[in-house]
Length: 160
Length: 73
Image (cartoon, each protein chain N blue to C red):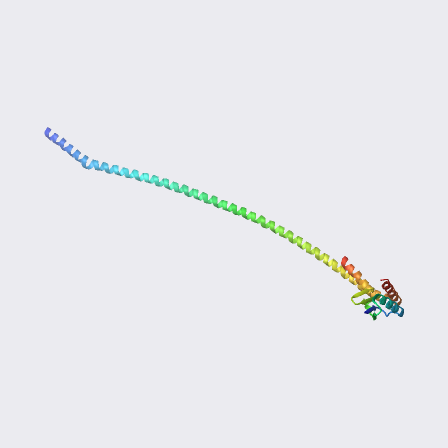
């Protein structure tokens, strides 16, 4: 088997053409496809990162909103408790004051009633005493005593 | 003028005379006197001349005392 130079040169040229053709028709499009794919992946990664950051922001916002709502609820409850306590104190104070006034009023009524009853008893007693006195005088006075009383009154009348 | 004299027992003649004299002196000679016996006055004498009344009965005196007792209580 003879090695011919022309054959070798032909083969080299042939190989160079094949390499050139492969480079032009295959390597460069593949390289472009790989570059595009790489760019797409990079864009997707960026998008994912952005989405992640947005999610974190949303989470932080939700956490803050929840914290704010809890604080607000806590404030409202504290305010309501304070208001209820104030109202309770006011009601208690009013009830005490009303009870005091009612007791004073009842005491006054009782005193009045007591005085009225004592006065009534005194009057009843004096009426009874006078009734007895009338009866006793009526039965005790004899004619002589009657005459004496009348004489005395006539003397008074004459003097007047 | 008509005068009413109320007593618990009947007036004696001398009492009636003395009374008539005194009343005529006070109210005039044309005065007529009516006597009434009422045991309710208890004792003493009550003279009523029109709207004027001279009450010297024991009943009246007891009533005065009763009123004073009521007022003081």
